[in-house]
Amino acid sequence: MSWWRRIRTSPEWQFLFGCLWSADRGLATVWWSLVVLRAVVPPALAVSTGWLVGAVGAKESLLAPLATVGLLFVAMQTLGPLHTQLAGNLGDRASATLQDRLMVATTTPAGIAHLEDPELAADFSLARDFDLGLTSVRMRDATPQIGSGFASFGAGIMSALVVCGFAWWAGLLLLIVWLSPHLLLRDSVAWKDWGSAEIKDHQRHAEYAYRMAVDTPAAKEIRLFGLSDWVAERFNDRRGKLLALALQAFRMRERSVGLSLLALVIGNGIVFGALARAAISGDLGLSRLVAYAGTAMGVGALATLEFDWWLADAARPVPLVNGLLQRMQRIGGLPAGAGAAAGLPSQQIRFENVAFGYPHGSGPILEGLDLTIEAGRSLAIVGQNGAGKTTLVKLLARLYDPTSGRITVDGVDLRDLDPSGWRGQVAAAFQDFVRYQLPLRDNVAPNGVPDPVIMEALDSAGAAGLATLDTVLSKQYSGGTDLSGGQWQRVALARALAKVSTGAKLIILDEPTAQLDVRGEAEVFERILRATQGLTTILVSHRFSTVRHADRICVIEHGRVIEHGSHDELMALGGRYRTMFDLQASRFDDDAAGDHQRRPEATG
Image 1: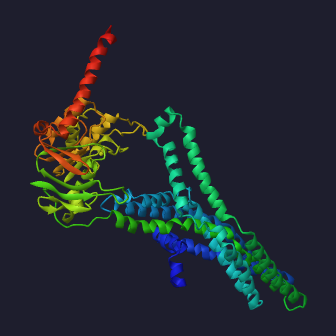
Image 2: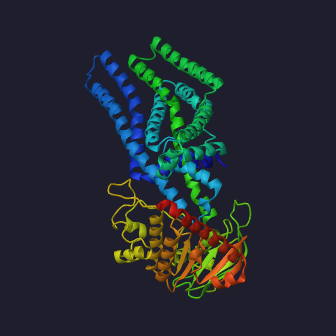
């Protein structure tokens, strides 16, 4: 790789001429213009001061040199604050640009494998928190410092050029010795191990502890079990290790510091000694001596070491963020078929010898699975935990593709259909449904449907009367409210039913009523079956009192379908389904008997 290519692919280049430029070209242009102006003013002020001193000595008019010095002094005092404010704005926009890229990187892939990949999760955690000040400085804070650093660099270079007017070697020597600290101490100010596995591990654990402490869902258990100190200690421990690693990386090497000081003392001694000799010999007048001495001192602006740190620290996340889109697309992307999915399924869905295993899993989840799902009917899927029920649902929603085998819809391979078009035909209520901190209307229909449709969906899900459609479902907002777990599940079911109005033909219910009691679940499922009559409904549930109402039932074990039939057929078969049904029924009977025995004591 050539030196020019190394420069163009460096994080610093990507930050300065990629991130900042794409964030706001107009603002970036003004930012760079102010860098140039601030670089010119200090050496110009030194030269003007020499002019003023010469005019005093020659008893000439002081109006022009004094006005120039005053103007440059005012400019030096005002350009800095202006540049700082503008740079903070540019930093905010650069941060927003990177956050937008992260959003695109996570949402662009058609699948979800990239969100469940451990290595990508570590990198994404590191990239996502770049602007929280946890592993790198905020861009709003860094950009003003970087702008001032570039201005100082420019002023140092311009000053060195002025000194070249005295002697070409003097300007060059000062340029070299004042740049030497950047070369000798570079390893001390740039955190090269920022993206190491150790840093990522500490960052992920620190972030997790932080989220537990500040997010509402964990608040009850943290207080109930007295875990406040435990969470704080975990966060402090991981953050302490991050800071220790950072300080270790920033620790300056004594030898490099000594060499830098030696170079500065010798180089500046030679130049200022030459200036003194020239002044004593009469070869250098007072005016020029003041100008050259002032600009010689101004070259020292090149040694602003904190500029290296600010630039390196702010630039670190940029390549990581820029590279995530390609990496996430490679892992989470799915072949984009072009087939139309409207109206599907109208006949059947078939799993044909389907096998699947997660990329970082311990083995196959599904293996040689064959299953036919008749369109327009309901199918319940049962099995022990880990049997592959939820994985089957993910494949059906095409969040993943099978490792081998195929899934067909009316004879068409699911991979040949447009993913977005197919998902438009699918409505789902998952066991880990989302609780949007939005009004009830938006919780039921995020993409918007008429209010009568929303009200009908809520009624079908048994959620009528929970709140007005404009009520925000979060107590963190004024006038908002929160719901119980069972009420939230009914809202999630209403969300799936509302999508039916947009043309969805396949309804997937993955443990949709786990937080409802047996009677509530039976009632809701009866309502759902009525609301989805004529559609294809797939239910994953552990409760056989609900499962038995489905048209067909399949039992999955070790990634295969081992039984398939109606409730009566499977009970008559006397196999795995009958065993699980009887076991659950006996538990229910035991609970009922216990309640009956306790009831007289409670009323006596």
